[in-house]
Amino acid sequence: MGKERLLDFALIGCGRIAHRHAEHIANHGNLVAVCDIDKVKVAEFSEKYNAKGYIDHKDLLASEKVDVVSICTPNGLHFQHTIHALKGGFHVLCEKPMALDVDECGQMINQSLKANKRLFIVKQNRFNPPVAAVKNAIDQGRFGKILSVQLNCFWNRNEAYYENSWKGTKVYDGGTLFTQFSHFIDLLYWMVGDVKSASGLLGNYNHEGIVEFEDNGVAILEFHNGALGTINYTINAHGKNMEGSLTIFGEKGTVKIGGQYLNELEYQNIEDFIIEGLPPGNPANNYGQYFGSMSNHGEVYKNVVDVLSGKGEIATNGFEGLKTVEVIDKIYSNSRERKIK
Image 1 (tube, rainbow, N blue to C red):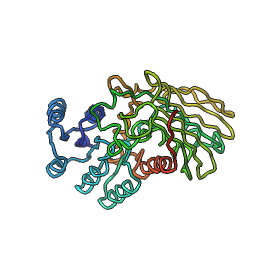
Image 2 (image 1 turned 90 degrees about the vertical axis):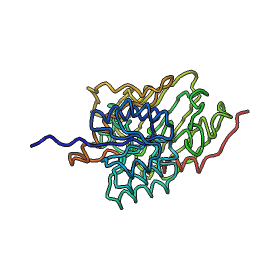
Image 3 (image 1 turned 30 degrees about the horizontal axis):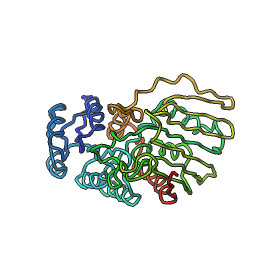
Image 4 (image 1 turned 45 degrees about the vertical axis):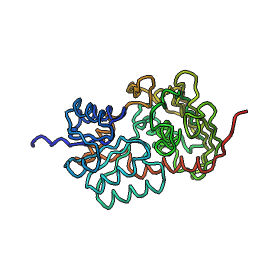
């Protein structure tokens, strides 16, 4: 048998996360073209990765014959860029969150079905070793019924993080749960199930004039299977990121995945079962002064290649991306804003 053809990729959006995508594309395929409305970014990016540069994504989609288009633009642009790429006949890998609107997510899924093209959503925290191990144990029934779950997201995002950026705006960012913590919300759905109802309290206590939405919040969730959940999140942790943790209480076991980025198995007490032999996780995404979720984009791209070559199942499809947005929408739609006195 001859050597399989490497997949050709295009990138729309040349911001920080796009560099992470470009590095992994080089390991799994060919980066043929890149696009950004910033001419300087396009020039630097295209030179660094030896790819053709475009200013208008429609020109790229009309001119290039790639296999996959990776969407790395601001959250509020994911919808239109994904729709255009799917209509152009390309498979799409879209960064999180899938979109900022439940209806837009549905349209993206429908367009992928119409075009008979794959829609992959980046949810790299699913590949964290302790997360994958706990999910596997849940699927094996090791915990019995899941009774309740607690999600803590305690990070720091200061004024410099939002300076001269789309981040912090309602139109392009959408909210703290979308940009900072949607990966964590995804794990609630993936591990526990569909959320029936949600409510919460939100406040902007330390970022007035910096962001157009909350900088901290608490939420209560009721899952369709009867489990209860809480989310406590903030970007006001002093000086640096503190914790990203998920604690699950089941009939037959309790487990806490912690660390700053859900990268450590901090506690386990499971009936007649022990999670052991976990490999070390990848380092967190480095954004200069800040670090984000675990850098598992290599696993994401490996999955894209495996699926498109007929060797694997899709890790996170459009339907699952929609579920994350649904949960966030329920929280925001049923929350009250509070002012600190």
